[in-house]
Amino acid sequence: MLILGIETSCDETAAAVVRDGTDVLSCVITSQCSRFQNTGGVIPEDAARQQVLCMLPVLHECLQKATVEMKEIDAIAVTKGPGLLGSLLVGTTTARTLATLWKKPLIGVHHTLGHLSSTWLMDDQIRNSEFPILTLSASGGHTDLWYRTSHTKGTLLGSTRDDAAGEAFDKGASLLSLPYPGGPSIAQAAEGGDPHAYEFPLPLRNDPSLDFSFSGLKTSLRYLLRDLDQSHSARPNGEAGRAHRTSHIVNVAASYQHAICSHLIDRITRALHRHPEVKEIHLVGGVSANTYLRAMLEKSIHEQTSKRTNEQTILRWPSTLVYCTDNAAMIASAGEFLIQEHGKKAYEVFETTASLPLHLAVYQ
Ligand code: KG4
Ligand code: ZN
Image 1: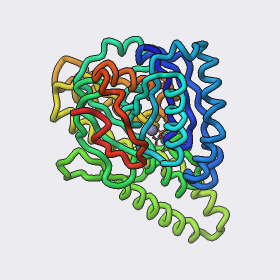
Image 2: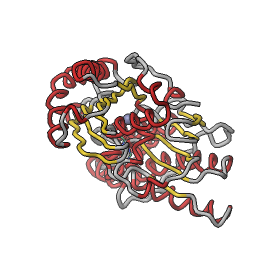
Image 3: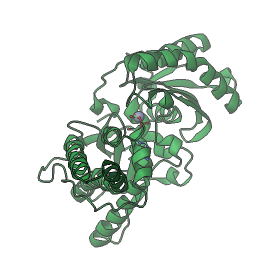
């Protein structure tokens, strides 16, 4: 099947054409990131207005790059939620209009199911991938751990009780006066730093759930920076103190990144311990772009599985950075999997919803 995907849940306007859930014929994204670099986050009304301006040019470019005609498209898949309502409405209204005009079936996709599908994009090896799969979906709006028995079925093992992992990067970057989005800024600032220079407490260490919590890390960072500031300004020369602090930032960034990643890995390894039948572990969402996280996961899973069994658990993440962060190819792919596994039910009428509960991303 050939599916046109549309994603406008936040500050990206995206459209893509995907064949059979995996082959990306085109994937066009305009990001408003630079607009929000000085605000420390997205301004919803502003984001929605930009969506209106970008939607049609993005759609036009996407169809042109895919070199497909409207009549070849089998269905349209669009993010129905969760996200910023104004932004979501631009995407869903466009998709509904096209579906009516072109007489195509329309599929409403939960944004998280899009991320869960992103590891299948342009990855030949993954066609033979085996369930059950443990998936960590971590981005700016959500952090959740899934036990999946098929592309669209599974259970939510745990989710964040406060901030999302990406939010912890974003808020941390703001405290460190680094640009938004915080994930790439902190990863870059941390290069060459000592990840053990400063110890952060491991969140929910004695909590038996598989939930996440990041707000304590952010608070610890605030106190650490305050203490560093105080010790530096106590130096005879304020300038020298500031220079001293700058030289510490690389270690602070490395330690903070290490703390966020340690919490994510701790939850994954606990889940794997409880579900030894898991065949693969997938990392998806904006935070899955983090190379320190990937390396840490490889190391810890290698240690854990070689102790447990001779069989290696397979690790996967999206084949390119574009598929880690918000994009429309993942929405088209999820649309394909919904049709494959649920037939006509996939085309049910849906509402555009800002707060769509997380557990509804998959079927039980
Ligand atoms: O999936 P995404 O594009 O949007 C949401 O659904 O939220 O994720 C964006 C989040 C941001 O918080 C950003 O800081 C984070 O992903 N991110 C990263 C990296 N690249 C993006 N976090 C850590 N390391 C990265 N390299
Ligand atoms: Zn996302």
